[in-house]
Length: 294
Image (cartoon, rainbow, N blue to C red; front, side, top):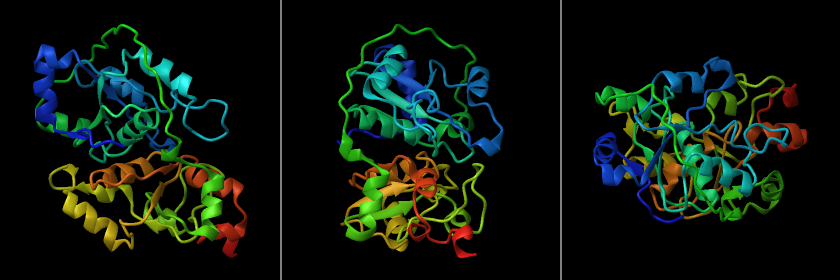
């Protein structure tokens, strides 16, 4: 991934929106996604209130609908049509944000990663998300503007995506480290998974860094590079060695990939994540899984 400006402030975005020349080159996307147990309607909330000019990017619509797993990456041509319908071409600067309770560090990074996977590096995450935008006193809107469809040409980057087979081989080869972005209770097998039929636990030898750890709770923004480095290192991660991010279903893993990106490191994501791993692996390939230890 290139070192394109990947993180922008609410002030920066406000100034761009206020500048007609700058705003014409932007496409703002609300990529809010809520876990099933939240019982919230992301698109319904978007229709009520969003950053002026924003379009809605649904990771549950822009996905591989033929897969048995949730919001897996779509085919390149399907991604191209989806974002083209949102008025995005290969020269568009895309700004992604979400309205999660975690200061916009949850599903926005999934959208950021997806654009990178399909070869679009001109994409930035709004630091602090919609929550900080509102806290900073900037205007919101309930008007969904019509946009002119455009043409986006995808360039799939397979090196940014890991499969079940990649992770399985790595159990023996140990060619990369695995970090898991789920909460520690789910990782350690002591708390429930949010999806029916899935038990908690983790991939053997994986390290746990809950995705919320990346946030400076006082400022409501991403931690500094120095703090992010300490976060990885204190969790037993060697930043000089290859690293792959995982989570429950491929969303919050992208938060850790994004955090590592701030340190100049490219971190692929295991798209199927724990849900796929749990359903396809053998008991010997799962650690701290309750049903495997009874």
